[in-house]
Image 1 (tube, rainbow, N blue to C red):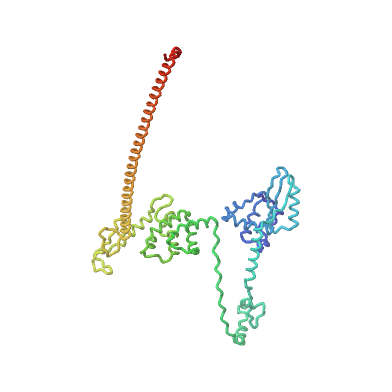
Image 2 (tube, helix red, strand yellow):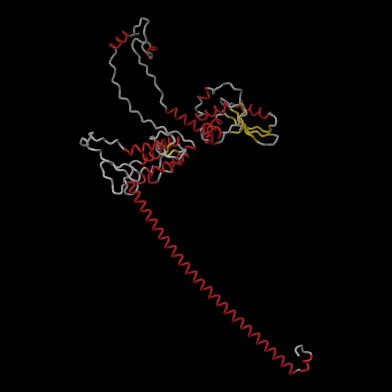
Length: 468
């Protein structure tokens, strides 16, 4: 769509009557009108480019565009060119609503241009008209429901009506104006009636949160799908969880936040807690927030739970902090007195897990295997998994051997069957050949006997016989 000037420019800014036209425009439509007015004639207006530039969704700007068209701030004209019979759309923008005379004058001026065959007005869509009517009704309903403010004037004796609303002034001599009169008036004024208790205020309706863009809604939906089913989150999205997800997405892509949720679910022990016999979790919303919120322990902005995103190397600051936690407090020197210990008693030695190197609790002896509880459980689970895998491999090997044995037996049986069939076919072929040979011998003998008989009965024919 190409922009066409509606009337000569009069203002460098939007007129006040347009800004105050809340019945026809919302803030989004007013902002879109400002953007379109800012461009010169011939500007190719594309709503996707404007939406991408200002961070809005295309559907929202399409609705704002419909409001502007219904209010006649924007006039769309369909033009058919005489050269190639092609149709084009041109947009005429007004800083105040266009009148009927201006629209007719506009159509006449466009129709009078060269190479223009038809110029007609394109009315707003039904959806745009319904949205405009809904917006006007909503504004009117809010205006009617809002109580009017009452001005209360406190009349003080000895003071005019014009002075009742102002503070105490000072005379030229520096004395307080009306100070003596005020004292006399206070003495003469009757006692004030007791005030009535104020009526309880109605609780304010909680305003909904800001509307998410299409990209934000898709990213939030992707992160919410990463929460495990065992967490049993409610069907609605609490504001605190939505804000935590948006905060995480402001610094990380959705894929990184999804990996963060999956990693923390098992690394922080939540998966073990929800298992049968586990300690359970207190608040599902609190756990979900803990799964997505950014870590505040490391000063490196590229650190993601101990790993630098751009390099993939371990974070040095996190490693140093972890090492400091492993070392624990500085042990008391010999000869110094500690609380709960005698003078000169050495500090109790703390044992370290041989797997994760985590320091054990003070005062407890190191276990025989040298493992902490989580590592011992992981080792037991790993051993159980290895044993189960070996058992499954043994069963698979046994099944493969049985299958190979059955296939070999079937192959041998097929070979014997094929050999027997071939022997049977060969015997039948030999019998057929022998029978054919005997038949030929009988036929030859018969011919010989017939020829001898003919020769005896007709000896005169022997002279003509080929066999004589």
